[in-house]
Length: 170
Image (cartoon, rainbow, N blue to C red; front, side, top):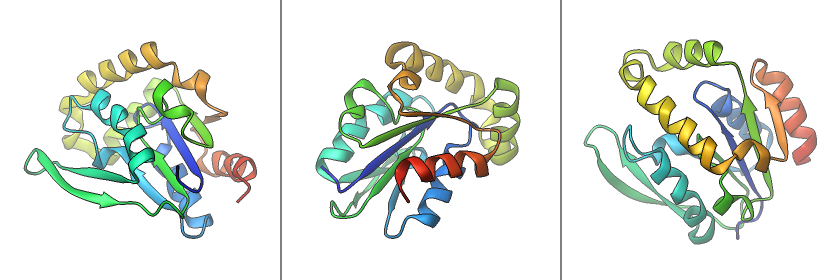
């Protein structure tokens, strides 16, 4: 198992990536894996989530090349350094016991959609509904919010980070 691992989960646009960036800026030597770099395409939420335990056990992850729609190179992780894994599907029944802390980011649907499409625009817009359906299926099956140590309001990244920082001791 890695030195210390934090899982950050929540639906698209809930503030996961911003929280991970804030944590990384404050936590020296932390490694960050964004599941957006792991999902094998727009229908790959379940597969990306299923990779999380393997990432934690084997200390590596395989990138997905969105341009070629093919698996990319293996990316090594240093088991002596802390790790943050963020993305929809990070917290599952299989991954939770392998991590020290799990954070669920919560935010209303309208704000999430505005944020996500404002950030990713035309790349995400045609896939929003099918991705949202995968999120619902994942949440209904895994209940990641109930597995989390912290449930944070995604409306304020600064507030979420302040709470997470205290909880993580960084």
